[in-house]
Length: 112
Length: 159
Image 1: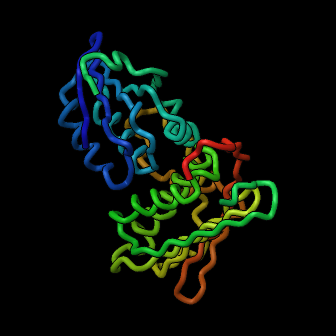
Image 2 (image 1 turned 180 degrees about the vertical axis):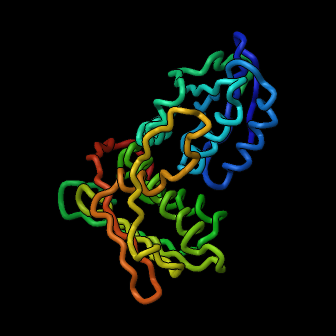
């Protein structure tokens, strides 16, 4: 599970460098997020621009991350791809998260 | 390659595999790739998500506490609809019927929010004609995914 973290304008931005957050990586994703952001305070923005697919297990993992980061930390989401956005919409989880259209500082600092 | 959504063009694919979590990703990739050029990218996303929920349920529930057995996934496109049929030899659905699967109201307190339970609600939201049968030792799930018309480029596409 390739997650890259950087601080941009006071927020911790975690870019998920994976195609998918699904049943086979949901636990890994939770564990890695705990390592990366477990001690954070303030805003954590999850950059999902490279994630083309999230299933209900992946969605559950993202909700679990939001819960263990709270209350010190608020988990926000950025740059949802269409299929991922649809999952959040259908489950009404789009009402739970602040969702940004674009990822902050995208393309800065990390050549790809 | 048949690509006419309006008429009687038919297209059929079948996948047989073992109900193991490590196999599901590959099956999803192959199933979506099989129909990718004939359906819209939005419908491809819906197909992948629906099959992911169904197949993960089979791995986690139908074959819970028993060795993973076979799954047969059949996809049949006709006109503006893709009929999906999934068979397994695992445990029957409790009460021999499908879970109600309603989207829950979102809890107002963060700590009370559910971290799952959306699978059947998603399946129900994305499909039509959802039907479950238990035949002898087989679970058979059948549903349709409505397809949007696809306008394909007339030339230049690799075949």
